[in-house]
Image (cartoon, rainbow, N blue to C red; front, side, top):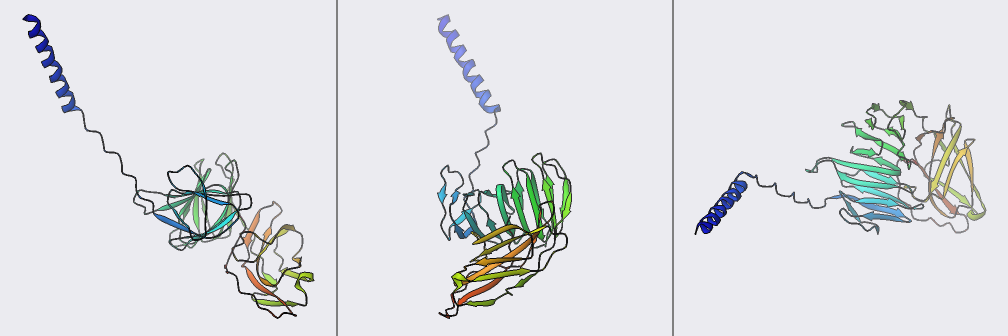
Length: 317
């Protein structure tokens, strides 16, 4: 009898302890509900191997023209891959080969967006959004219309060229440097920068003039001469020519040009865009020229090919 009473007493004490524990233990916070993907940018054009990885997935998929990327997605270009993206706020992004990007939200309310450049090169133009790299973060100046050229090495070292607009860079080492149009910044792999540098000005393109028509009896056997004005302080020049104004896979991409002209042989009938930038003695590239367009025609055919997409400014990051 005493044993039964003792067991009942122990059971009562145990139940009381469990009740007190549940009463004083706070309820766990509910797990946050994942936010649905929000469209961020459309793949307007691409060349070669360009892959996307949707948020929360492991596999990479080849992109297609017109495909939408959402916040949280990743984008990767191969050695001969490149892409032109258009964001919902009309900003544009040119992605160069061997690049890895992250499109993300800076806050849960989706009011601020950011673009991560983990490696490779991009040119960003349009309404300001933050752009981060492994060694720094660029913040846009309110009201400015920035054009930003960024290159990121495999070790995270970053080169930033502010070719239009203004912003501020905060390096991983804690330095804060304001950028104005026509200035640049180099950040090493440790997140430190020696400071601001002035970019060489953009060359003035001379010939063929914009929207010119160049006629040859046989264009495939002809030579087209591209000419621009000398830039003070330039050691060499970098010329890019392509059938589209996006310069995704340039037909001609020549650097270390010692003079102010280039001869291009055998351009087929078609529309071409070209741009030039000056390179200083330190090997740093300056501001890109405006892109000019010209048309190559055959005197025998007299044919006029359809115009390709145009673009006002371009740089090769």
